[in-house]
Image (cartoon, rainbow, N blue to C red; front, top):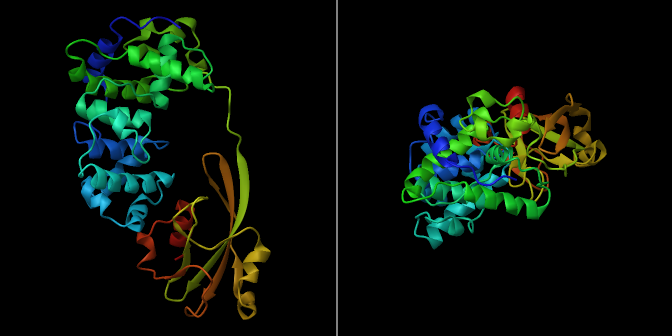
Length: 349
């Protein structure tokens, strides 16, 4: 690994002012609530998807106080379709912590922020550097890629010691001097922008990079080999059967999923491990009315879910299962539903 690069931070700051992203709804603000919300939403999710969710969420919950006093079902309802629902549950819990423990005011330092629910080291640093100018490094996936390439950092990040070394290297690259705190917001945003728009995982746009001539990976001609991580999470698959019971007036039987587990805390059609268990839950007199719908697949981060909907149309809500309740056609669209369940109900209604 090379030494910290001369003028690296200055070049990033100057580039961001001219070429960086400055038009997104969570930018050009020092409001930690908006920055926090955007950082959480952007985890594992593309910007183009987040924009509409962010706008709707802020319209309903404009500040941390309104979010803290909201019920979780309302939060999950607005989050429905965005995926990774633990983010929404942690978001709600964190807002309540800020309200209860910090008087509804965000802590200004990354160390305190990192102690709140769902806020990791990088997210905490993003909030404190963007909003309060604290001199702390972020190291999300995009920034990790930029730094490992620029420094030629080829140690295996599957090892915790190497990850710690990269954090130290990222800290050494931060703006320094009397005006460091003033430069931190634009530097942090610039690092995010470089990773998101220029230093791409595949086919990086090296000719557009402000630090291209200092980049060790570019000099070696192999930028796509960085970062190095040998441990890969294995994909798995799972088949589940869904009991789709619906009345003539559009009411659907939904139950809340247990925590932890797939779709934890969300409302869902009853889930079964196989068709035999599903049919065992349906009274014999209704068995002839069961209709299998086409199987479809829903892709999670590390798992493929093969979904088998079995529909039961009823004249009225005469059957009650052990868990859940009948939800009217007017009510269910506002609940927190897994994306494939919402799609299924919407298409079938």
